[in-house]
Image 1 (tube, protein in one colour):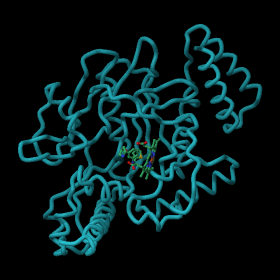
Image 2: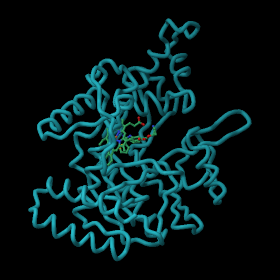
Image 3: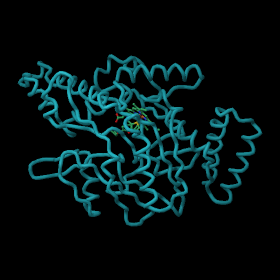
Image 4: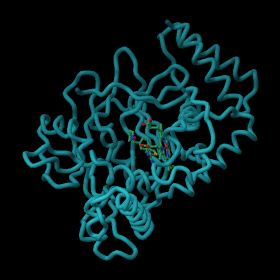
Amino acid sequence: MHQDLLKEAEKFINISYHELKKSDQEIKARLLEIKDEINRFGYYKHTFEELEYGAKLAWRNSNRCIGRLFWEKLNVFDMRHLSTEESIAHALLEHIKYATNQGRIRSTITVFHQKTPDQSIKIWNHQLIRYAGYQTENGIIGDPDSLAFTRECEKLGWKGKGSQFDVLPLVVQINDNKPYMIDIPNDLILEVPIHHPEYDWFKDLRIKWYSVPIISSMKLEIGGIVYTASPFNGWYMGTEIGARNLADENRYNILPKISSCMGLDQSKNSSLWKDRALVELNIAVLHSYKENKVSIVDHHTASHQFKQFEENERKMERPLTGNWTWLIPPLAPATSHIFYKQYNNEINKPNYFYQKPPYS
Ligand code: HEM
Ligand SMILES: N/C(=N/c1cccc(CO[C@@H]2CCNC2)c1)c1cccs1
């Protein structure tokens, strides 16, 4: 069992220390240290430098991510010393504050204690900031994606207002303790009301979205060590909000409303009413985030940035991996160079992975 861990550790140290331009001497010495630690404890501890670079490599290896040009610019907060739910929840609030930065979003990851036989930390949220979803007799209120987690929060005593945009509480669990739940203070939640640059009626739809996507349900694996609580954020690409979160039928499903306000003919598909509504919604999202000085990237700029990433990787003689089905944007995919290429979807490590949900 320890053999696999040692192999993973050696691969990671060799790659990272080489890229960090360390001497062979240093690599050998570090590997001896790790080998000894694994033999004594069954696991080993990363230095901060290894943790920081490992988190960046994991981003660079994320095949589904179009935002990887900026992989070296990641703020890493080392919170491996925290061992209580309260202190962990507080660190999550600090992450939200730091990453939001009044709208000039900073790509950030907070890493909590690694998984060991006697300690596992689980964040129950999918994203630190997300809207609740409620099943009612006349349909779903809020985000349908949040139905299950909202019910778990209600079981823990949480009571939402029942609006379309109730921000869910943070839920943190150590081992099998009772999960710890706290509300996020309102002043930490920066939201953007969605307005359209030409259609004044857009604001009457009263839709908004939150500024910072902070994925808190994935695990980070570096050199055989697993960090089951490692929330990370970047900024949004507009289509995530405008072409999926607000547009999907099984999400906020607002295209029919937009199309009626535009006076489009919904009686036949060939009027492309859905496509026209989609484009105007995405224009509104980008316009609103920019007007509120909240970081966002449109899918054309994001594609160009990804092209630059491809070129950088080629220059560095690193084989590029990617997942085409996720990299092409959901709006006008064939306007992106990505559409016309094939990508090797091999999974390299370090990387971010799904893990089974702590509740079900
Ligand atoms: C800085 C701006 C960033 C942008 C614009 C961006 C954009 C995206 C987009 C659009 C997706 C697809 C999401 C979906 O279709 O649901 C994605 C996936 C992903 N991104 Fe990035 N990203 C950024 C930063 C980051 C950072 C900082 C990390 C981690 C350190 C990261 C890790 C990932 C991972 C792991 C996925 C796949 C998620 C999954 O499999 O569900 N990204 N990114
Ligand atoms: N812009 C982003 N978008 C996402 C990145 C990763 C995952 C997600 C959400 O993925 C869900 C699962 C499949 N689609 C929705 C969104 C980022 C979040 C955190 C760092 S960048």
